[in-house]
Length: 295
Image 1 (cartoon, helix red, strand yellow):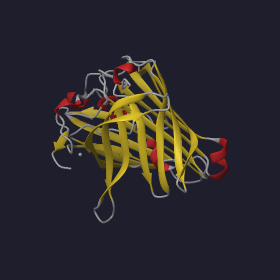
Image 2 (tube, one colour; image 1 turned 90 degrees about the horizontal axis):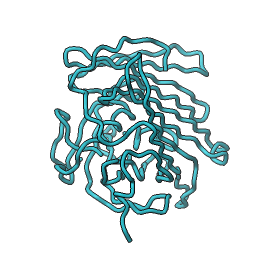
Image 3 (cartoon, helix red, strand yellow; image 1 turned 60 degrees about the vertical axis):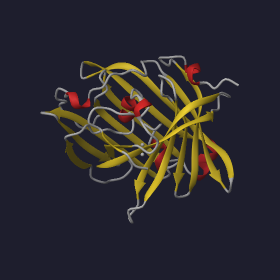
């Protein structure tokens, strides 16, 4: 899934929640303000080798309470071919929904949407997050000019009388969000990576753009909820705390085939840990059986 590309910074060394961290997928992509999207520059373009329109993936979500794993909801990731401002594009929708049992303790309805060009350049991103009594909508509009990536961000509070918050950022590298990074990363070739290699990239996070890090961990066989075991590439998403210590936030297990489909996600939260297991996948570009471990 995540491997070398053009000028993405890669360094050798040790390489996106039930609540807030579910949205970093697999980890993982609309309109209160209009931004003119300028012609995309080559620094963000990539060849799509891994997916096509019509792909639908379902996951079971689990949370650990007192050493017991409980199913707390479902997640789905759907990809469609569409148009954005009159031009061909892909749309990705990631939905995570807590079960009725979970709603009694904490209601969670997260919907992420993104549009990318057929060359996988980010165009638009929207995250609607209903978590407990909090409901926010974050949006990002991307533009490109003279080799520079620009993003305009906006946060609204539909349930509260709070002003709309705006922010703007630019970078000489491509700026991603939780879903658009997934579209590009699935087409990268992992063969040149060594265990411990790091992948650095700027990513939209709420009203900010933050430097993010993925670390390649190697390969591992993982059992999914479709009763199959898959050969997987393993990547860690890490963040630094206030003391500068690097902590693992989420571990991605991605099918080691041409699909590079997320098979399992392990999330490490302040209030415990959570996991997402592949339940069903249809419409994949290549047979997913290519990564199944024969017993």
